[in-house]
Image (cartoon, rainbow, N blue to C red; front, top):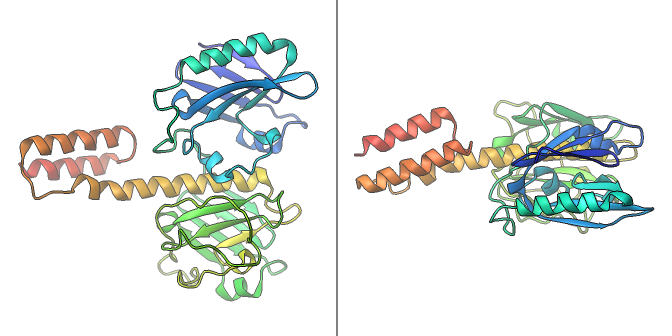
Length: 324
């Protein structure tokens, strides 16, 4: 397509296989948009496209992402306000005909699996390293580890006793994010084996975002202070060393949500990579050449999809060939 449609706070550039969304940097632009800057959304990541009347003489063009396609949307779990939805383009009402044209163009390019949840993330997550200041500590993520450093002015006694925390993403089970615009927001990491555990009454009680499953969570080997035992997950987020809580001016959406999305994407990616060898080598005792060839073909697809590294691909392929 190659065309550009400029709206309020954002511009959509239509390519043959994706939509590039560029966000403005004005004082009236939501801070989340300014933080994201731009996002490339493949057509394969979309489930539908809508065009509806907006407020005060506007129309809203919205691309609806498939469940599981965007780590930012997954982390937000329906908590974003309409004004901070990165998939909405607000246009003057006089551009409705043009907007309808592009909506039809996008609908024509939706994939055959548009109605189904995505098996993996198709939209890139915000890039690490990143950090933000919560009410009770500072959270940092370098792409491999999440760390919490407590503030003596805000952290609970339980967190001070546990000490500063470091969590390798390869051992995380999931991420929970509750918007700081809601009552008692927080960012909480879920230990391995507690994916289905429900925190008890207290901070973090009530309806919250769906838990995201993945690998587990343990202390970094050799760390002076590691996370709490998975057998005793605190009921309250303000007592949980695997969580930071938000307050007025602490952990705002435009800082904490991209952070949560980046961690979630890394957890999912590492979980997929860890699961590949077992899946590829299942039934290794069989030596049927046709079976070996099929497994090598499947391994190649995983490699092409980015779920297997070059080294893993070469090693596993050699192992399979050695079975002939």
